[in-house]
Image (cartoon, rainbow, N blue to C red; front, side, top):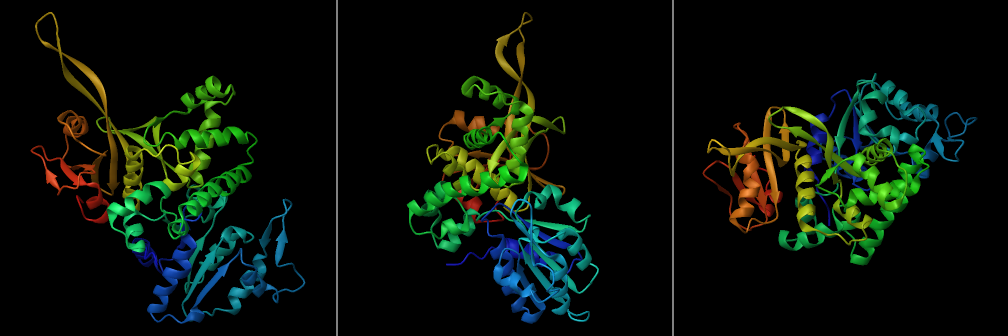
Amino acid sequence: MKFSRNVYLERFKARENNGLIKVITGCRRAGKSYLMNEIFYDYLCSKKIKKRQIIKFAFDSDEDIDLLDSFFPEEETKVVQKNGSYLVNAKKFRAFIKQNTNETDSFYLLLDEIQLLENFAGTLNGFLRHKNLDLYVTGSNSRFLSSNVATEFKGRGSEIHVLPLSFSEYCQGLNLDPQVAWKSYIITGGIPLVALMKSEEEKISYLKNLCDETYLKDIIQHNGIRKQSELSETFDMLASMIGTPVNPLKLSNTFKSVSKKNVTDDTVASFIEYFEEAFVISKARKYSIKGKKYISSPFKIYFEDIGVRNARLNFRQVEETHIMENIIYNELRYRGYLVDAGELSVNEKTDRIDVNGKHIYEKKQLEVDFIATIGSKRIYFQSALSMDSEEKAWQEKRSLYNINDSFKKIIITKNSLNQIQDEKGVILIDLFDFLMQKDIGE
């Protein structure tokens, strides 16, 4: 079984030879290396690019690192750091690249775990001066996250963010019917390695270990965190709050009332930022639709992979409603949208009458699950597991009806019905139709 990941391949192809360093980011085990070293490599070979013109190098592979030993033999290839880790000698690596390239042919450099190279930003920026070198890199430490890409490469980086398998990639790669695939996808998510595992027990064990031994330890190490138990508890709280408003001050108060720990809201906000920078979670900021401005707090939290979220809660809180919302959020990002959570202030007529016999109006805050934007294009989305009553249907449509613009308004619901549009222009789409067909409603 093979996952094609064509959406990301197209993003690679669109950036080919653009004069920038292609920086592939994403959470651990999302498939970044496979995408670069297998899928993109195969594409280059299909274009009749000679293999000698495609240089693959992994800085966490001793087999690759051994190739550098003959250059400047008086110097160490692995430069040991104070904490016992190592960095690869950049001078040796540059000599290796010089020996295996020339100034006339085109070369593709596919470099894995680039953060393990000494002064990687300086080396890569130097390579950019050679117009015949096209650079693609992956990395997985705190210096190599999206917020730092521009700084590290001085405006010379082009980011390709890779999510775990989308639902359609999962179905197609495993050759599963969407109805069948949904039952496993909402439990163990889309980490490619996990999707290929045979037993549920193996999947669950791997995901729990990924949370504890990889994500948490990475964040603790990279940020020098002392309050490790508090970080772990914050992880638990975020996992239980997907799709609900998150306020660092309220979480700080929860620590005080429940755990009897003094954790400031600033510390909680920093913890959330660390999880976001490690691509464990994604933050959807609130946007005032009528006020046309962002609201700093509260915001919503969604997990990059739903299996990781479930593993953190020992698979106890598998609420389909919230998980479906999380999956739709990731699907929109997978399609290239910028996604915010919407808020709408409205004055609604009540049944109450004032002294003049007129209806009293009441100010209310309504929510729109997602505002998805690409350039000047915008679509409003609501996620509703079911709309089995008039009251529920009104509840979901109410905020959309109050938006006075011409952009599309869509409700995604798990109803197995064909797409319909109501008299006020709101489109209803079945969940699986939306997830499996890229152009639905767009």
